[in-house]
Length: 200
Image (cartoon, rainbow, N blue to C red; front, top):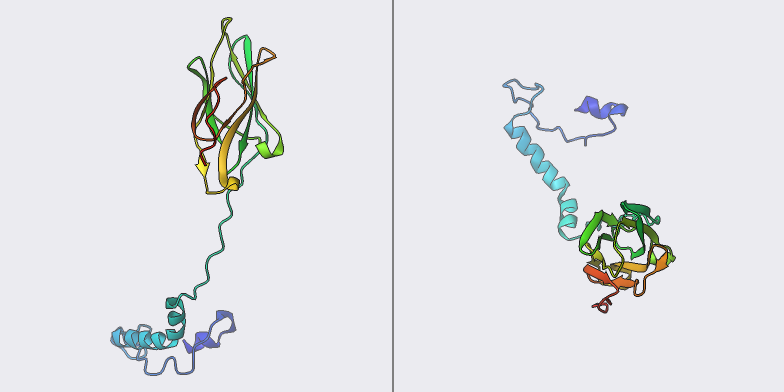
């Protein structure tokens, strides 16, 4: 131990009396390379005395609080994609209020889901929109477009509230009346039905 303490490369030192009374006879021979039970108890007692102030400080709550974990970064690059197939084109303009993760949703026409779960990219605060082209073969007449918002989140403030916005719908190049809505609570929104007011 003393040789290690004297070695500059060891980068540690022992107090002058740290080894006093240490028999190092754990294998039955004095001054061997193994400590016995009595040595271990003696060292533990000395450590307890040396560390008493440190332990008392920790017990008193003086441990510094860990730094806050920053919220995960959410990619707000606008999404441009096409789902489904067919000669008719329904174009949705979608944005979100971002909180912790992107808003997820599904799209259905007349009760039939088209594509899988989509994740919004564009932030409503930026004034941008995702452009989602939904393809299909739909007969003439009225049809219902349903957007189902799946992962609403609320952190207690307006800045920590995940929402989904339908900013416009066109069908074969023509604007759909009532094709806008703010999806504040989770669940389905069907154009042109109004969405209930924000509950918070």
